[in-house]
Image (cartoon, rainbow, N blue to C red; front, side, top):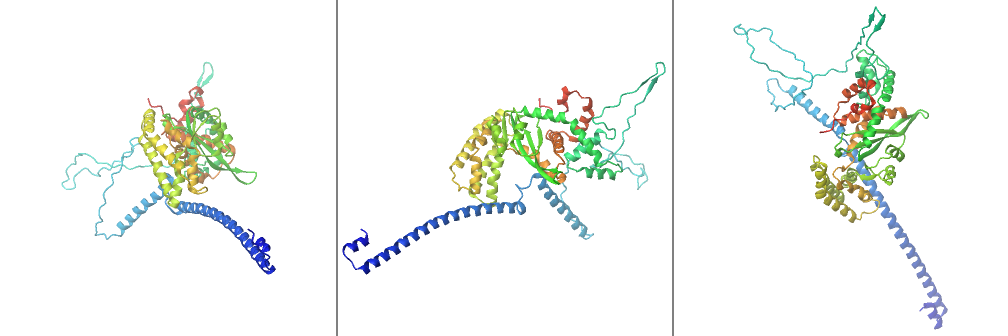
Length: 523
């Protein structure tokens, strides 16, 4: 019952009714304020939750950047970069040992170190014998004649830096007095119209620039130290002509690559000079790699493009159908709508959990790493098996481990926006793509082969900094494709390119496969 109505019915004094009205108004006002405070508190709690998530995200990123700069470089550095520090440590140890030996008293014999067994020098290297014979063949004690009973020898590795020489091509000319004609051997054909450089010099320039990442000005300086004028402009002209001459080999490698049923793909940014603006702009070097588990000769093909648009990969792989191993970049998605099968990289998934575990010591991330490592351990066991044997191994052991891992991830309920949520969702969204490798015996588990193929180019960018033009970028892609494929096949790039440049001018196009830097198939 309403209190005011009750007071009115019993004819309560007016002062009492007014006091009741005042008290009721205060209660209603306090109730309204309490409701507003409750709403504000709820809003504050939501804001606090969002702030906590943001703080956790920033703490994760900060810990990761600190680890990359100051901590262990197991994931941040590749093998080549880690070796730089390992080399420094070895050099420091040797230097300290030398200084200690020099500082020791002359009468004190330094403790002998166990002698390391050094590997024999390669048998294919040319040997030059230097005989250190006695000055006299008579005995120092009795002056009798010495008789040779054997010999001892040691071997030292020797090297000759780039040494220039001149090859003179002499073409004797003969005349027939009877019919008054001249005869001579025709000039040997050259891949470019220049008699100044032999195939060896051309191969040295290309390998130095595109495989060893030495800028042309350094090659010019190296030649100058040997008294040879070799201007950058001249070398640049030769490279431009060689790029055109070697284009058919690149095109054939692209054709051979597209005959594969499964491929790796990745891309890396490069800088391209933008003369109109006086600065550089971003371009991309796309990389496509054959699948090592397919049993064919490995091939890597680079494709230079001015952007990261998915239309470039769609154009390169036009009419190709197969399984494509890629990261989660949206540029590849159009291919999967056209019938290409998507395969996801477990190394990428592992990296997300690794960062979370390393930065925040997250127990769920540690468990994920343990489960993923079991998948890799099975792959290590099956590395040398045939495709059929590997398929059986995966069905018996990989598939159950994979199913258990995916179910475990599906049961997790991480808070949206956290690092764990992003790591888990990365796998959940592409569960079929992550499972595809275990259904076969010839698909890889990760995208590391193409990342390893890109790595030398990424390291080289620190030397050559940017491409001078789009055409220069495409030419670099051609030459890096040929040299990179040669390295994958265990073919010595310098010797291969020299041989190709000697043969190419008169080589029939029908036999172009014989010039490709591919190892012969295993019989």
